[in-house]
Length: 125
Image 1 (cartoon, rainbow, N blue to C red):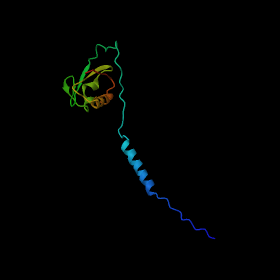
Image 2 (cartoon, rainbow, N blue to C red):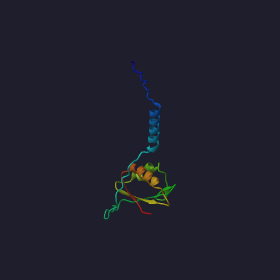
Image 3 (cartoon, helix red, strand yellow):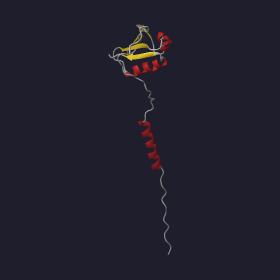
Image 4 (cartoon, rainbow, N blue to C red):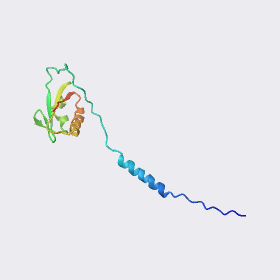
């Protein structure tokens, strides 16, 4: 007596491909593509006064303005400003005017990395 042949069912790859595409879409939408950087901040200490020769610079950061000792300035022109010729350890006091966003302050601090001679202090508002 001959056994009836069983017909093998083929596996459908359509559902597997659908799941893979859904996973791909999920991971693409939930991942972040922004680049994070670090800004080094140091706490203020007492007794570490500046030398008498070092004249401090005052930088006022507004929501759409930047002033160095009262003169208008842009973030791109910081390296061409008098700050570029500052002596080692020259204090730079940053004052925030109005409701400045933290991203704007971070952009300023990143731009000031090009001027390592300055001793940067952010004043409380």
